[in-house]
Length: 205
Image 1 (cartoon, one colour):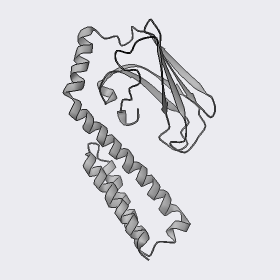
Image 2 (tube, helix red, strand yellow):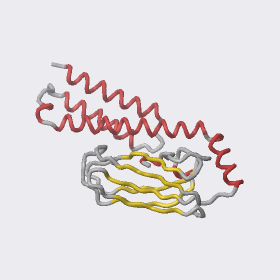
Image 3 (cartoon, one colour):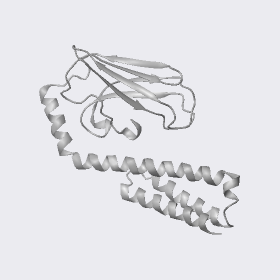
Image 4 (cartoon, helix red, strand yellow):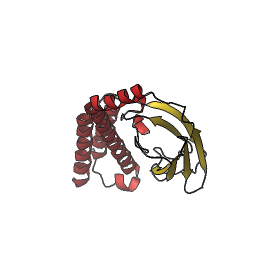
């Protein structure tokens, strides 16, 4: 869901009735609301698939990003009716949506086109996925470095001028994130440059 990445749960051609489970988490600190969009399709980018509906799970206990356990259960009955239930495991709070088989129902021609498009755009979809993964990794590392240099005890270990060098590398990395179509390689290069700056700063005594 994050970054418009489609997370397939019930594969095409799955026999029914069926129940599938998938675990998700939060992407921001102290997040108390989570949106769950539901799509049908074969593409990596959610925007290239068919929207079936959306529901909200709220409020959930505020936690650090990635700590919340959000279990989603996808149930499809013999009539093709889909029920999606999301539960936050700590509080037990849940929310759900029921989608009839007429919602987003595709013709055989539309299904065939959807499958063809998935093959046709396979390379671009893979590139889209790699960009997303590289962006996630860079964002996570930036967050760790920001926490590191904001800690007084850690900052004291740095020689004069080293913190400024890290902050400069941080600014460069964050500027790269602002570029919407930044490629995976460019994002990885900025992460590597930041890691080298941090490693050098803390190894200088």
